[in-house]
Image (tube, rainbow, N blue to C red; front, side, top):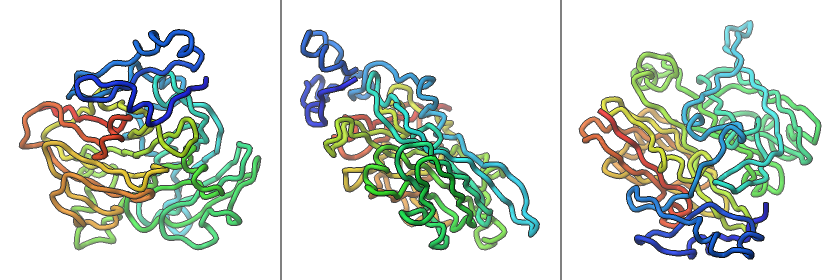
Length: 359
């Protein structure tokens, strides 16, 4: 399906209640034959006066859900090396496939394991990580991990770059602890990343290595009683240039625009919230996260156990930057609290969401 639509035309298609109108897109042929039918596909959401896409993406056809991506941590196949070190092994393949990124809008994505973003790799500081990487596409690809490793494991052209049909193995120790990412680093870089080849790489702190902040470290270590007290979510800020003019037509958290505005994310008021936030947006210098009615502490790159910024309600990230947000609604009344990019164009084009705080 071909869509004759640009980012600027999306914002100019009409106004209702002060918001721009986003709707379900029809093919160019339909627009030419019946403009009235095309215009009728646009509507405005009553929720917070915002504008949202009409209809829903078929997550079953896509093979992944933006809501599942919030919490589907992948610990890999776990075993123990002779030296006692934990080994976590993963199979990751590049596949070219069409995904639906807005209702009726399909995008020719390049994917890790068939989804955008790829699997959320979650390990513990000091683990050995082994990635069996297969290239099932028509182009060269790599996996570049943000972390500390040798040049031999860097995943750039000429270093563990898999040609079509090839398999390579990445093998390194997980450090430092924090909120990181992985992505393809083959040329041209902007195309490989924008097409969907990225994912989260979270390294939990090992409490034994941080006796000065053992309680804080244990709260981040998946599976501990301290960690289970938290409501943890992964949010990957991404965008899509559907007509390849190097301007994005849609913005989102976890790929699907307005998903968490249409169906707000349920939060238990008496449990703290931790968000692993990553920006992989191409064609825009920065993206941002703004929280309504509340403030949060921010851990830049997640590599400290004390906040790098305290009591803020907006944070900016350039591409590849990431961090951890911690906050609580314990003193708040139940209700909907928005969170979104603080660039109005981004939220109108999909990066607008809400928490549903419940008692």
